[in-house]
Picture (cartoon, rainbow, N blue to C red):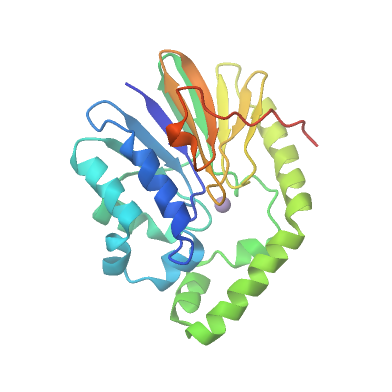
Length: 249
Ligand SMILES: [Mn+2]
């Protein structure tokens, strides 16, 4: 019986490897015993805003999540900035339980605090503006010929500012975790795509994005273990590839 936490898969039809990673991951779960919490940004903004729900439901990875749920698996989802307008879809089409942040859960005696991370104050204003339902709708209705270049500009802007953005967020995460009650054992964050596992009280974990690999926190009777796996990890024995702990900025 294990509890799994993951975030920032950023499913997109033009990035099928992300869906394949999620499919492989789901294949290892036991719906009769395991529970899964997705801490935001399961779907990328592009996919969420531009794909009609019926087609979205046919996405292989999303269909596998629905199947996990139908087979009795516990699936909870909290909103990220990319998929906050998809919560009704997740509830209806996937059968997910929608939870709101901050979320406090206990797993195998470990007290865990979960947020996506975009609401803690480190985000640039222009990005927050883009996350309105109006922008989501407008982007979804935009002709492909206009949406592609805009998407490319936004991605390039994100890449250029990545280092600063990550450092700013991680500093905010560290302060946020330090201010949590002493009862919290592990503070889980998403949004930043770099996997971080920082010891301390609470232990600070940034789950990590699925753009280039799979990463998740597994909690069972052995305690919480942060797994960061390359695409060939399935053939490897039980001990996963571990990302070294990153020093904080
Ligand atoms: Mn995010």
